[in-house]
Length: 354
Image (cartoon, rainbow, N blue to C red; front, top):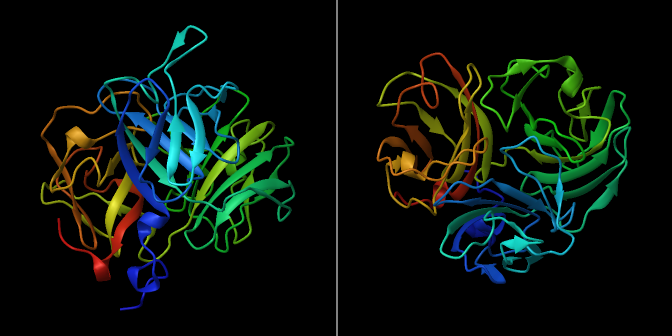
């Protein structure tokens, strides 16, 4: 069995590049530690009540955030009262009220939160690989980059900073109200896209990604206002053996559902049915440490809803992948195409069963 580049044998753990940390709010300045690195992208969701998802990255700056369940433009909190900073072992959040406006997305006393954290490449650098210059923080070892660019309204290419073609990327207009658009290699073609903020099935429009698959140096955008003409942020991923997988599966409509081989024990997975309209789902290994993973641990990028109390079985995290335990359009209908991205707790070679 080949040794993964990110493995204990090489003095590294998958959690050195992606890690989930749960915490409780206190409505004062709070340093959330235990991430294990200074993240370049942190995605936070309140668990015990309805609140929007809050996405921050170091390329845009810690005081700017976007909301995955909304088409809204970037929010700027120049006073750093909510998400204050990215730190060496996590991040710092602060009070929940600024200028008389209450918010509970980061740090409300008595509320519980989960944060998903990724390590990119630190301080962003200029990238001139594309027809438009981009600002990129790229981690080539982990297959992840954060890309900022300003579209000129014409079909263009954007440098992503990775050494392989990204297999999935998520793009958001920072300046205007518009959908989050998602490219995934296992949609019908590069003319198709998903929207992270909706339940919509895949849709076709050549002007979103210019009908063009990415290369090892650039991704393409067309003339759509969803990907061009303003300031944009893009989160780019490609699979890394033993650490991450961008792929898909076909449902079988059985409660003894599809087994999806990943080559690692999952720490985190996002799934979306592409064939029909239904919700995105996301699960992690910190909010549920035993199988089966239940609906009570489900969160939805397209929705502000809290965790539920449902005990319905959804899936198992196994030493070499995950297995569906639920039927229906969201997870497992026969013949439907489901796209996903997953990150590892441990490569299969070192994984222990739950």
